[in-house]
Image (tube, rainbow, N blue to C red; front, side):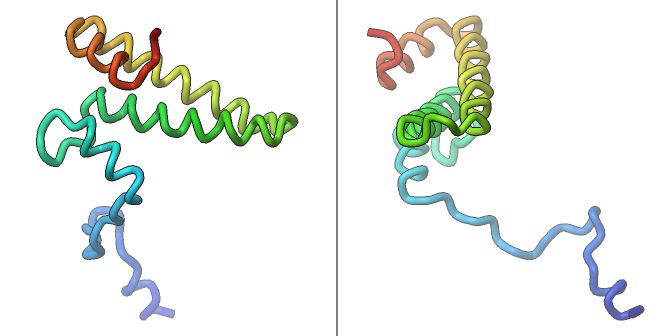
Length: 107
């Protein structure tokens, strides 16, 4: 019993396990929208990844129209993307315009 307690990692200890690598599809989006090398946190990358998730959920909901749990999740993702776009628009209008053209959000 004491051995199991000693083997458990505490929250403060860092894990020695490497971070999981993103799927090839996700990696391609990150590379396409990255502002600089290794960038995964910029608004451009985040909006692009959320847009991909939104498109997948829309396809899922077309096949499963009564899946209200996924529909609620979709609304949350759309809201998060909208907040990121509002932030980017207030910080840098040029980057915002370029991003919506690149993703194809506005016609």
